[in-house]
Length: 373
Image 1 (tube, rainbow, N blue to C red):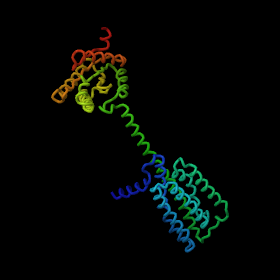
Image 2: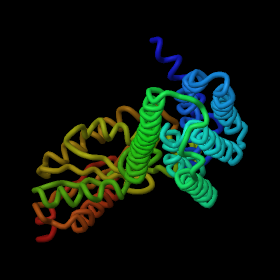
Image 3: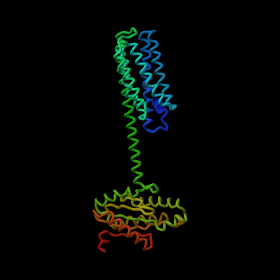
Image 4: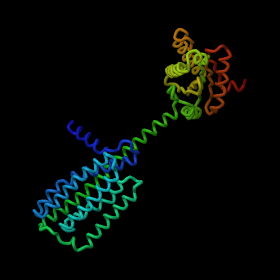
């Protein structure tokens, strides 16, 4: 429980200045804030180590190091105020100057040049992609300073009188500092990309569901049911039913289109309940629904649709609404590998027959039998 408030506070700080940015720029700001916080936390103890190296001579470099740590905290606030470029420049230029100064004070053997090796990776983290020239410029500057430090004799001998033991400890400490920066940088990138991948997968899944689903009735649309039709035709005998609401125009005219939408939604729900797990319901268009019944004989399919017709009649009779809601259905049964187009044509013909015979009926036939007729 104790970690949650701290973690929440850390997330708030890391996300400072992110709201309203596109994902790419947001990643740069989040990466910069994380770098500033992590570097400030890691480098703060160094002020004591530096100050204790050879006082009072080393008090000045210790204070400048403390100022750099405070500067990183200021950079987080600059990001919060959307001064992103200023934060990136200050956050990277200051350590270049500071570590060059420490290398001159304690020599290259102290390991203080090593943190500048990370500037290149950090520059392309804290600067957004459209400011890659700024990142390249800071990287080139850090590389130039680093080369100059190793070529200049001024960095060969320390200005402060420090022991070999202290020099060894700082060398190891700077190696660890670089390792921490690189590891945290890699961890952040990994977490960010994993999060974005999961988010994209979720959005893609939602988009795919939306593309296959009718928004009003929440059943399949034509695009969603079409692959299932092809699978059913390949798998064995199957039946298709086209169900159409009787005199739906009257409902819209007398009750309004809003009420008509409610009726369509309720009809879809009743169809799904009546069909159950043995079939799949889709909105075929307007007030027409397609019911796929794989593996069913004609008699079984007609019985299922008759049950749905009765359920509709009982639930939405004249006492429930100003206009009664009934359905007519045409059922077509087909053998394996019968084309879905041919089966749909027969179902449509039988639906028309049900309508012509007085509505609120279920009429069915087999494709093979119909072809002989």
